Image (cartoon, rainbow, N blue to C red):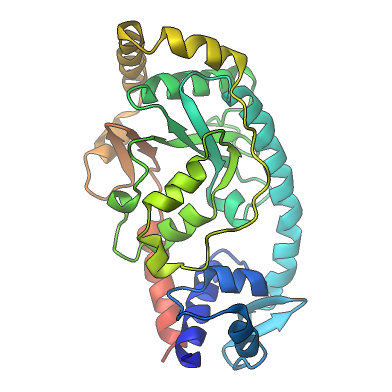
Length: 308
């Protein structure tokens, strides 16, 4: 095995998570090593026991870029914050599994990474039935608003943000990538936490997105917390009635209502080619402040400085 290449892949992983003040455990380093050579955990253990201290440090079982030991305590503090937010997300999902045509719900972004702050909102990623994405989004937002869990203009801490919907025909994420090595999208996909997934869509996402294997071949197979596996009563009753032409009417009506309520800025952003905001068949992505390009540039710069 080429130890130099493996060390480089470790530095690339640590450099990415350093952007979020996150050190990694040994297990996480193995899982998240970026484009590593084929090797087992024993080879990794040997490398981790002989790391160059001028580049990588470790403390309390966490590894980080040299000089960044303060983020260890920050991560230990954020574990409790993440746990609290996931509990809130689970409470919201008990309502969302009632919504017709929602097939799966995942925690994503900062909470899934393990990097949320106390005032962070909770981002959910939702998979729907094809041809019913607008119905699902309409009732998902409505039910969260009625239960006072939806993010608002004045209150975002611990509130639920529904900014990304895909239908089950659009599980391939590669068209959404901003570059062949879209580092954020790759780690995003492999850190999703399924909270409602009765049809095993998480496994389908991994199977569909084989391009991830090139960058993160060790990341699959993580032990995840159990997800709710049974749709709610309202979903089971409403879906059969709304699958045909009547459902098409509801889909068109809810689409018109939601498009009317979208801001002009959001609609204009959807016309840009940057893939921050997408309003398309089977894809609704409303990330006005998508930082993937900024993060990728910072990651490449950090890697460049360390890999000289």
